[in-house]
Image 1 (cartoon, rainbow, N blue to C red):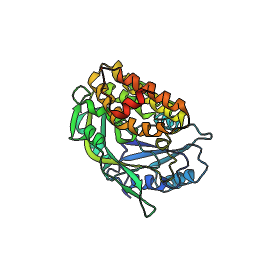
Image 2: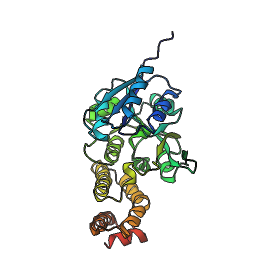
Image 3: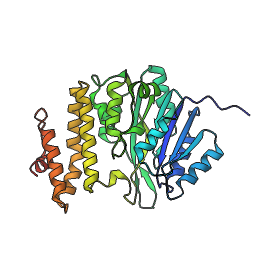
Image 4: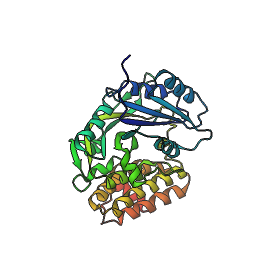
Length: 316
């Protein structure tokens, strides 16, 4: 029997009640062209079959390790659990309802190995429900392409400020040393925890790479149960806006005005319009007031231009 190659990257895969999708995430790891990986599957006290799927994967393939939380702790805490157990040079993240493309790890790990950068990020697409009851992968959206295309090696936010628009944890491979030396952790108890951590990675990396390849297919669940589909709830909105503002604050503190300006423009053009649509008919006036206060703060930055939806929100 040929021994397995020594793993170079650990993929942290948190999951809570995603039994309908977890097998696809596991299978996408098994299908990787880079085989020198291991994965830490974090079952965050699921009430369905998620934990059993993880256990079955670990029984069949020694590259998988399972951790079961006795009490649900949330996505950030699950990722932090995984971070404490990583012993490979590189670390990556994959949510258990998403899936990797086959060359994802080969492309990302190979890029940082070649460049010596601390971090590599790739493109991603949405998996949307189709008429047949399944999911179909979409196209790379403009803001994703702006962050990852064309390929750049050993770049920085000074040279490539639009990279700040790629704010998800699972589109990246990073050196474990970056996390350790900077003491980086995911903020526990908050939704949209990727936002601040992504900007910390960019501003503290000695250099990062971008590749235009699609590395992850990100699922938009048909039942609307993922947190990104619950922005009509006021507590979720507050967490979302706090995360957006927190990411900008990281860029400001690091002396990255071009990246901060790029981030503000993207928030106004992409994040804000759907929130305005929700707010117009929202039964709670506090939703509109919260959104309006946020937009006014953005507008106060360097005279940021407001289009019609943003101007409407600023008046609330």
